[in-house]
Image (cartoon, rainbow, N blue to C red; front, side, top):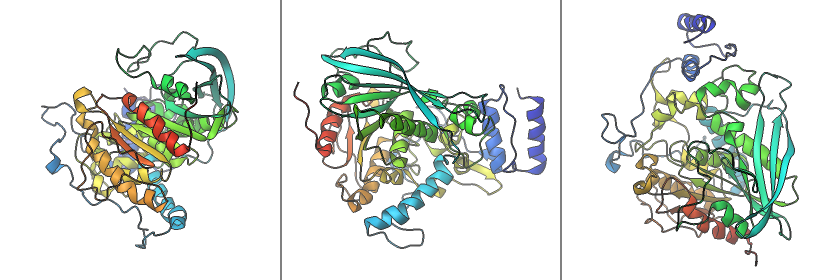
Length: 473
């Protein structure tokens, strides 16, 4: 149910066409995802969106899983060709010319722009603990990053982060920041959020990533994405996006939730840079599923992060938008997922609009270029197998193709890629066969929708390139 004021605005949109760029809808506690989604369609002049396919096999509208039909747009945007047609053959031209072009396209059309007036974040230590993880003593810090809301006190944003480092470290340690819901060691765990498991791993499985990291002399941090920005469209008038917009709906180029989560991770890194226990040149970012998308976005836009573990990220992450296999662009432009992206991204799911219609082939950039923005830093792409729950919906092959297509930028910048050249003809390595010789790495494990089985490969792989020996304990 919409308010009287919202109904009036909808009538105004109908009479006058797309919402003017300086028009706003007053913040309302009753503002819904459906309201917000329709608002953005009105701003863009979109009358109808194509529905995304179903992930349920056997459904009348089930997603395509036929590889012969998976590449309707086989030609990807060039990673090393400038918009004027000139080829990029030198690293300096990548950094000064081509990379800025790709960043601009992602910001304008796909992920949105971080506003220039985002308020300052002040970090405080809320609580500390001394405990053990496995056999090793650790020091834990519960941190809160308060975002200055003096410009709009109605919205309060406090970023929640946990930092845990080895108590017996001889100096600053590398740290993996993970999108998720951790808790302070030595304190009772909070109620488990839906979809997360704080309990012990199943018998016979690897130790948790946190235990593996601490055992190898690393630290870890958990940053709570929902404390930055809610994972739904109704939340776009709240959280950090809503705070900057003073409770008003987004404009088409405004940032989406993925970019907001990435911004929060960058503010977390600001905090870590002030902590003497952390080797700030060796901080990584990690996430699985939608948080895998966020980890990739974080790494692509913040060059201070030294490494990334991208777990089962799928569409909107490492998967090519141009692939018609499993989840598609139309799923991202629907009301369930559009909030991850810039408003402008809805154009690419439009079937009827003032500009006609657009599809995935019209997007000026694709996932291989997002991966290329990570070069030459350490970039590890992880997937599981459909039989264990890492569904075909994610399109593991499409992500492998994107990784292959990102390779030329890694090579140009002096890093080693996957060692393959043709993204259209290359097939994924066998399950449990990793490509881990370069700064760009790939491994599909035999587990489910998790990167858990790949941590024991990620840590030594990262150690090798960080030129770091595991501690003797």
